[in-house]
Every structure is written in structure tokens, then in C-alpha cells.
Length: 259
Image 1 (cartoon, helix red, strand yellow):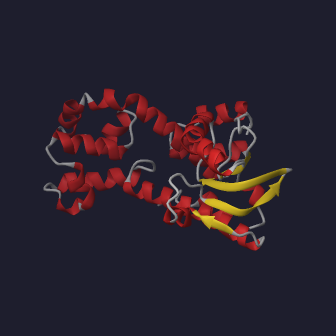
Image 2 (spheres, helix red, strand yellow):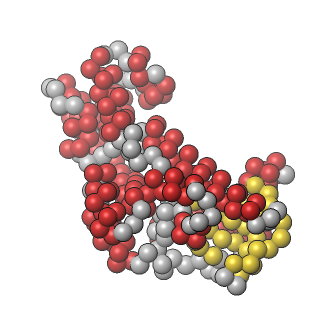
Image 3 (cartoon, helix red, strand yellow):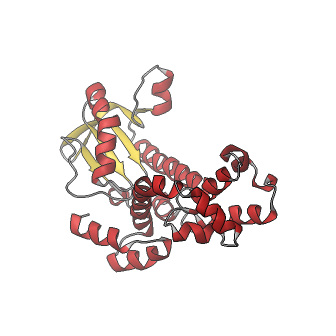
């Protein structure tokens, strides 16, 4: 994706209600748009969380006067699960306690509103985290099927960890695989959009080590990537490279967007 299109999409997204409209306007799968919105939401939370948390007492006061947790979250432009956590902490209820069993919360209104908060939160709720984990597994499964269909032998991340390898890609190929004139030795699957920030983070945390240990590799950002990210000789692909290879791709691009 070119940077201008990305910036237009980014600025057009304020919440999940914008996803379908933006998807249609820019002819992008809803999963791609959701991924960009998710990353925008995380960035905003990192920027604003401390400031919002400092006013926890005010949030509780608003709640005690009848404003719902979801309404307070929207007013402060923060995911509702995080607002619920702040309010509960201010009321002396630890996060671990209510996350494990919401039904044990002592107040019926509180119980109802915490459930509503989590249901409305597509980014920080337990269900959102579960969806993200499932999408990660789906991406890895597509790659595994793709490699097997080509008769390519490989070791998985779990195989490598059992061998005592510290930093492991999702797939280490037994023999180099040539794609676009490059011979790759490893593949890493990422169920997200590869913007500059995400890519720089993973280059530093993972990809540089993989290169040092195994050689040239390929990163798959399933939900797309910026055209100008620097791969330093490696390959980068997205869902379009695998279209026609697996029926699961459509499911991956649409998974978890409604609940």
C-alpha cells in the first residue's frame, strides 16, 4: 500500500463503525482496515492512557452519578475495557479478580456494565485478544499448508524451541526456497498490517536475529504493508501472494469482525 493511501485510511478511521465504509471506499478487505484501526487505537492508548488514568477518581464519580462505563470510555476516547479496569481499581477491585469471573462482581449494575464494556471493545477486551490469537494461528496454518503443498520440508517454531533455539521464526526451511529471485531460509507470519512502526519493532526484536542465525527470509504481513518499508534484502508479502492457495484466506481477512 502506498503511503498516501495509508494516511488517508488512517485519518478516516475513528472507530469500528467506520470500517465497512472505509473498506468500500478504498477497495480494501475489512480485515486490512480493522488491522490499521487496531494499530491506531493502540498508538492512541499509549499516548493518552496515563493522562486518563490520572483522573480515575473523576471517572468513578461520573459512574456513581449514573453515567455508564461505555459512555465514560467514549468521552475519554479510550477502549471500554481499560476504563472498566480503571474504575474497578479505584473501587478496590483488582483486575485479576473480575477478569476471571465477572459474575462475582458485588454490584449488579457494575456486573452488567463491565460485560457491556467488554462486548463493545474490539481491541483490548479478552475476546479481542482471543480473536487476535486465533488470527495468528490461522496465518501460520495457511503457511504450513502452502509449504506442504509444495513438498517443502521445514521445522516449526515449536520444533526449534524443543531443540533449544532461543529466537525462532515460525518456519525454518530445510532447504532454501527461491521466490522472486531470492533464496529464503525462514518465514515469519504476522497477522497485522506492516506499517513503519510495527516493522521497525520486529526488525529489531526478531528479524535481524533470524538473519544472523539462518540467512535471508520472508515476512508475511497478512493484512498488508507499506510499499516503502525496508526489508534489507529479505522478502515481504501479504495475503495477495497466497490468493487461490487456500480457502482459509477469506476467513482470515474477515475473522472476528463481528460478535
